[in-house]
Structure formats: C-alpha cells, structure tokens
Length: 366
Ligand SMILES: Cc1ncc(COP(=O)(O)O)c(C=O)c1O
Image (tube, rainbow, N blue to C red; front, top):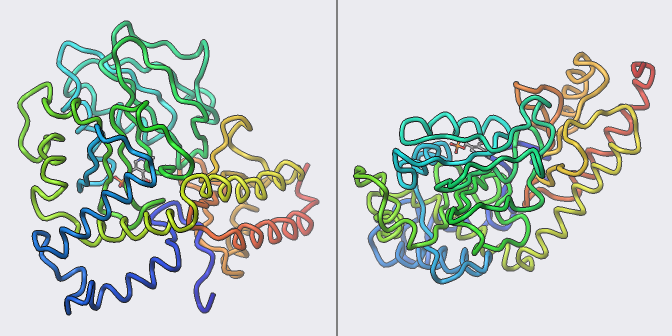
C-alpha cells in the first residue's frame, strides 16, 4: 500500500489502483501519440477513440440497449436538478419525486421553475432512515416522470426495488452514488444520471444514459447547452468537455469489465458491506442510521453511544490510516463509503478497529 491510506471518502472517492497507474502513463503519452491525455484536442482522432471506447465500454458494462444514448455533461449531478424538469416537465404537468434526503431535496427545489411538483413519498419525518414504499407512496394522476435518488449518499439508504411508474410516465434516477455497483436493467428508465466522482472516476463529469426518443424534443425552448438531445448528438462534445474525466471513466469501465462486470461488482460489494453490517448488528455499541431493509451497500452510516466518542473514534481511526470516516455534517457520526474500488482489506481493517474501540469504551454504553 506504500504511503496510501484507506480512504473512506464519500466522493471524490478512491479509484482502482490499476486505473491510477494507467492514468499516470497516459498523462505523459497516450496511444503512443507523444502527447498526454490532458493535452489532446477534444476533436482529434485520439480523443475520438477515447470517446467511442468509453461509450462502448459503458454500454457493455450496463448492457445498455441501442435505443439509449450515452453522453457526458459538466456542472455536476447538481445541474441535473434543473436540467431534468427543464427538458421533460411542461408548465401544466406534474412530476413525482421521492424525498429521501438532501440530494433528492436539491432536485425537488428546482421543479417549481418549470412545472408542478408532487412529493410521492418522503422519509423526512423519520430522519431519512428508510425508503418510502407501499402505501406510503402516492403518485399523482398522470406524472410526466417519477424521479428518485437510487442511493442516498448522506443517509446510507438505497432503493432495493425500482418504484413502479404510473401510466405513461418514465423513471429518472440520480444514480450518482451507486451506479454500476450491481446489475441494472436500463430499459426500465427514461434517464439515468450520475456524477462520476464516486463509482466512475473524477469529479467534474456527469454520465447520462437516456432513452433517445425522450430527449429529442424538449418540452420548451431551451438554450443549446441545456438541450439533452443536442448534447447526446454531439457525443458530449458540443463544447469542450472534461476530456480527462471522460478518459478516466473509460478506464474505470475497462476495470469493471476485467473484474467480471456488474455481477462481480455486486458480489464484491455485498461481501464488503456484509462484513461491516454483520459486525454492527452483532455489537450493541454502534447504532446504524438506516433501517436494515434499506441499507446502502455503498455508504454505511453509524454512531458511537455519544457524539464525544464519535470524535475520539475519528481521531484514532485517522491515526491508523482509516481516513475520511466522518459522517455528513447534517447527521454526524460516521460514514464508511465503500464504493466499487474500495478494497475489502480496508473494510476488514475498519472492523478490527471498531471491535477494539468498542471494547475499550464498553463502559460508555448505558
Ligand atoms: C446522490 C448524489 N446526487 C448528487 C450529488 C451532487 O453531485 P455534484 O457535487 O457532482 O453536483 C451527490 C454528491 O455527493 C450525490 O451523492
């Protein structure tokens, strides 16, 4: 491991080691062109190759059907909060949104600029510790689309089953923090978007997978930079894209394919999260934030018996090379983010530390 530590950051997050090593080489000279990846024009044959390989590998990883476009945008996943209603929600229509935490709320907050909002399910009153389902979900009569955040990075909850969409509506998913962590049926969605900085690469690039016929004609006149259809047609290169971001995402797709694809990712992620959750469940010292049935495999949130002990935990963990474990400021405690590239050995090391810490402070548990 050299001088690298176990980085539990929620994002930007750790990348596969082989990807970083390849990027080190390609920064200097990619495809024997004598020029590094960050120095190439986004319109030359080398970057054509990067774009087309990244798209093809993204399609292969997610088994993305032909009738879906794959492209990239800038402005983070946050820009998609307004891009989605701008493109899909006419003024007289309603869109249904699941309110499952901060990232869902950020999307909800932009809807009123464009059309009407129905919050079809919310776990706000329960501190966002679960995913609303069954009778707790009330769709509007004829929503234009239904949007949900497939994994709630801050709270540590995850949709295990897809929401059923009423009538002719389609699903929109903010998949920023669990995209390609398990097999996916893309044909169930109208649009998927994901900021890259958790499971796909560096920050500053957002991946979009969209059903092409849905994005061809936005519901209103929009500036060019806001038109999904145009961005898709131009392969994410209408203006100068984050070339390094697209390149690195491509390297991550190659890594996923080499590891055995999404079935292998799922197995690995289930095993890693299982090690941590099994321990938390077996030891009354730590309290998990999310209800068991909706727990995320990517972001694992828990607390010590007191906030003071949370602070001691974080300090001691840091000294052992278990870093960036602090929970989001809105919920406190700890958050272990263990995306695809996070090594199992780091999870095992964290559990060993948690065991020792619980023993040492057993008296603090009332
Ligand atoms: C689920 C989710 N959506 C959206 C965002 C916002 O992403 P960005 O900072 O790229 O705009 C995040 C960031 O962590 C996230 O976890």
